[in-house]
Length: 126
Image (cartoon, rainbow, N blue to C red; front, side, top):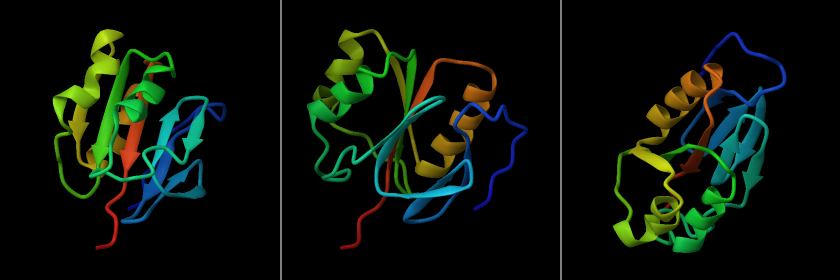
């Protein structure tokens, strides 16, 4: 799907997505990643949803944001609560949603100047 938003050229915006990729500022990115207004961290959560670890969320904590949107692929899935402790201990809010909703919500919040990150996970082929 293609997304359009009036944007400040200095911030990262999701301009499209598919089952296996994201377009950030019209540049394709494959694989799970962390996204903020000024950073793209590739190689995040290499084990996919089933392989999520506490360290994956500790990496999200280190981004210094107020909220993390967790996009869990084509459907909303909830990680084990213990994995989210790094975010909870740092008092960072989080929302869990499917990938498409996370991308749309990220664009709205970053467009408002909010301190937000998207932690985006793609479905892996079985």
